[in-house]
Length: 427
Image 1 (tube, helix red, strand yellow):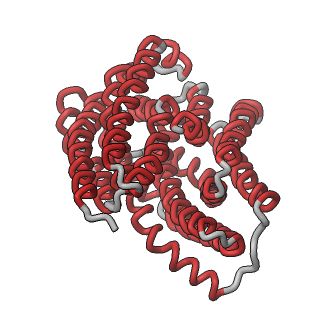
Image 2: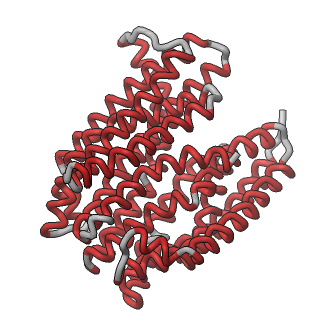
Image 3: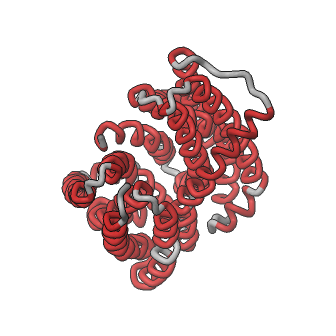
C-alpha cells in the first residue's frame, strides 16, 4: 500500500524538485535561494489546501459508505467550491503580505526582490493546485487510486516539459519557472475534475442551504486537519530563517535537500496513509494484538526503506550534487543530507506511524500535539544550539536531532494509547 501510494505523493513533490533543478542550471545562487525562500511560503499554502482536502474527502467517503450517491456528489460539488473559495481567499491574504513574509524568512536585498517577484507570479496558480488536491482526495474516496495518482503524475510531466522551454528557451528565468508551475497546476486541476465529471456522475446544483450544511459538516474535520498539516511548514519556515544569515549558498543547499527529501523518501511519507486503515480495521475488530503487530511491522519497514535509500544516496552523493551544480556550502549540505540526515529520518518515520495510529484510535488531538511539538520544541532550540558549532549544517543537524527525541517519545506514547484502547470495554 505504501509503495503504490508513494507514486502519487512523489509526483506532487517532484514538481518542486524539477523546478529547483532547472533553476540551479542557471548557476545563479540568488535565483536558487529565491526558490528556497519561496518554497517555505508555497509549502504553507499547499499544506492549508491538503488540510481542506482531508475534510472534503472524509464527508464524501461517509456519504458513499451510506450508499447515498446524490449526497456524495453534492458534497463533492460543495467541497470543491468551498476548497476553491478558501484557497483564493487564503492565497490572496498571503499574496498581499509577501513582502513582510519574505522578510521574516530572512531574505534581504536582491534575493528578497527575486523571491517576492517569483511568488507574485507562481501563487496565482495556488488555488488551482488546492482544487486539484481536493479533487484527487475525492477520487480516493471513491477508491479510484489510479486516477488520483495520475492527477499529480500528469502535472509533473507537464512541468518537466514546460520548465526548460520557458526558463531557457524563452529566456524568462525565474518568471518562466513560475508560469510553468502555473501551467502544471492548471493540468492538475483539470485531471482531477474531469474523471469526477465523466466517471462519477458529475456535480449537483449549488444552493445556499446545502452549501452551508456541507460546510458545517466539513468544519469539524477541517480545523484539526489544517492545524496538523501547517505544523510542518511552520517548522520549515523557522529553519529557513535560521539558515538565512549564512548566505544564499546555504539557503540554496537547504532548498535542494528540502525537495530531495520527500521525493527520495516518498514511501515513508505514504506509510501513514497506508498503515492507518490497517490499524483502524483491526482496532474496530478488537484485535489489539494485530494493532501492535502492525505498528511494529511499520517500524521495521521504515528502518529497511530508510537504510536502503540512505545507502543509494550516499553512493550517488557526488553525481546528485553535480546535477544541481552545487558548490561550496551548497555541496556540503547536499552531502550532509545524502548520509546522516537521511538516516536520521527514521525517527520522523516513527512520528508518521504514531500520528496515523493516534488518528485511527480516536486520539487525533495527540497527533496534532506531537506534530506541533516536533516542529517547534523539537526544531528551534536544537537548530540554534547546533548552529553554534557547525554553522549552516548545524541548523539541519539540530532539526534532525530534535526529530530523534520526538520520534522515540511518539512511539512510546502510541503504545500507551494502544493499551488504553485495548482496555476499553467492547459492546
